[in-house]
Length: 433
Ligand code: PMP
Image (cartoon, rainbow, N blue to C red; front, side, top):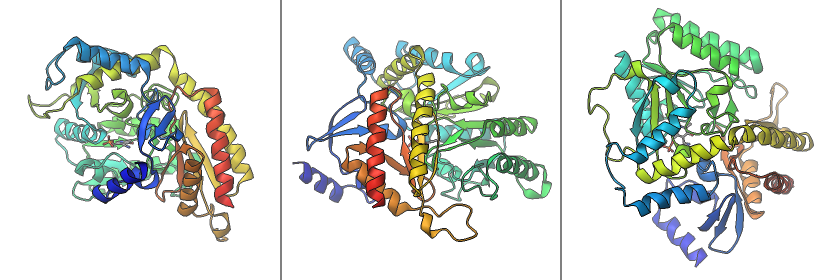
């Protein structure tokens, strides 16, 4: 039974298991926003496979696309050979790419995870520039393999220089907003222009336009443009990690489009595979400095994932789901701001499109010199558990795991959004008591 499965799995699975700890659910069926557990309970899923499910669970167009390949007799495993399925995916993806990349990009299939594509991107810019050092940002999350982990600040075996990511709330410079973003840019320029800094000639800069795991922190568009100018002026390839922000999530097809920045390399995964594992990098053709076989891998693109991905990309484009995510996200933020005004434990509400974060704080613990109250991870965990008790799945993120994150599918209806917000408001009130 249900309890038996939970118990056996918790004994057998690695101590590193994550979601299974805070979400004791045994999913057996799912459709759209809804997951049904083995205990017969139904949940509204605002975790969406960590932001993977642009169209929610088991969307009919995705299922159709996968069934079509399965029924066609096409090979499911072809290494990196050309196939009609791959050709359709690449054409659909290229049609969405920003600026010159739509006409002048190369694609490298990596696989199967986001972290593999990050690894490929870092290796590509090192190969193309012949340089080694990398620039990454405080609070970044790029994955769990050595290079990606180092770029996320979690390992020191790859040389990565950390730069301050701009944030309005808890600004590292203590000034917030535009002034904080300006200081971050100046810091970066000074470091790159100081011959004694030792990082004057890095191989590349990797950045998220909205930090997801870092606690849903959108970078200002002006700051993104500054980073583009700073890197372009110094011939440093700019790598933008759109693993979580891509495919309409933030209200534009790609989050870089908000600022008009065209990166040199884009790292793409999660939603591009339409719920199956797929990861690629796309990059300016002049960076294509690989020798044949320089970046290999048995699972460079799964045919079923490509088919599911093609259907997803097309559905998002044809149904203008990016615009929809923008307008619905703004409405949700508005209602959450109302909750913040009524609940002192909500320190900040932020996001872009349907990538939304609510930072939970302890208002009573703020000292006289604190600009904002300290993060309250235990209370955030209580909010998450109260949500779960009301049939709402949300995730926590941020440096202190005190940011409640909402990543609903882009197909969320107005009624569903209201149901999610009603449950969230109840959960917040219950956790506070
Ligand atoms: N980059 C970003 C921005 C991510 O959010 C993630 C996953 N949360 C990754 C990379 C790593 O992807 P994966 O877990 O598939 O390796």
